Image (cartoon, rainbow, N blue to C red):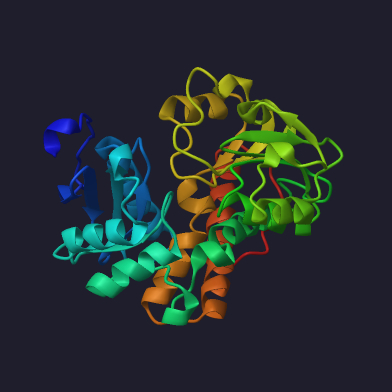
Length: 356
């Protein structure tokens, strides 16, 4: 229902090529933005949140265009956002996803995948309905990117490349992870496996902190048991957003968009930010980080693991091929980013990178 959506976005020479408003079923609205298809059909997740707006979806779709292009994928960028009323609590997720799938069936230049509020099971329903989705369960021949932690693995590959270029030292590095979901939990495990000390993590309900480092495997077990991180006995409960301002070597925002703004970016005390979420910082925040010499690896580089995995799946590739592509592409892009920063004197000179 278009009149219920109030938002603005900017169009330019890249797109968007298509903005579609849908009402898949009563009390549910959706917006689909196909930003650009110059490189191929658009891949982008289905975000189902109470606050999804067309402006947010359009910005996310543009991020996907740039992310896919930077990773050298034969795909353009797209995104969809779905809002459902509380009156739909009696409607099953299966019914919701089938209704959404039918609504986008004719948008053949858009390939949906999992995102906030949706998962591999949701994509299985979409694929069953219209034969078009990525991030499918392995029983359907897919590569379940959230289950396997493709995006979190990519963030660790990004950290590896920074370490290889002597930008950071992962051994003992203090790391803070905002959002202990499909991205953040896998990123925390992968970073801990590389020697980082995970000192704080958060979820939607709260946060836990331990300067000596949290036991990530125990924390994952607690999460699997359905317990909030603030109740984890291996650390102290703290206010959810306070962990964003902790002094650390690595900060991984892996929750929602626009976490950092012009009003709060000055409070960040991290040396390096790996953007695990899409568009976690506003343009004003990015300028402040630059002025304060806080290295922030953008979402289109750092968290591309998920869409790289999805693209390999779409081409019929294997799990091993997907993870090899994630390591190669994110490593190379991170190294190029550091090369460009060093050439502009934004970073000190460092040894030749090990990435091709």
